[in-house]
Length: 191
Image (cartoon, rainbow, N blue to C red):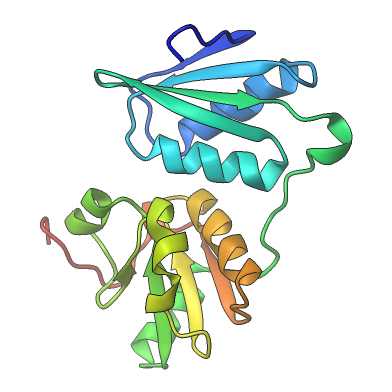
């Protein structure tokens, strides 16, 4: 496993979501089908982010090797005819979600950011299930309720909404642009 060979190595060290995905997407566009991309990152959330992104685009997530603080992610480019990136179709915006919360509507706000991101700042009563834990924790969510999925920018929440829809959740909305521009009520360590 230590002698993994990649056609291209991408340096995404020191970058936070969504930058590793954005850089990976650009690098992937330059590769030929079947080539392997090594993404070096330090953001702990990048493992779940890149795995979910690869699944949504049709590319193959091969795995991650940890070397100290550096995560080396390996992705294989799929052929062009099976790599159309899917976007979750049901989206809403921060203001609509803020209005639903203010009106005490019976909804679930699902925050799929990492636990540390949630701890410092989140929407009151939001359920925290980081994206990489979602598949194992879906049973904590009620399929009958309206679920509004948030992350920092809308990328992880898009992937989470797709996963929920695949598991039979029919009333799911991806909230854009997410917590990076949230002006509604929030709570957390810094509040």
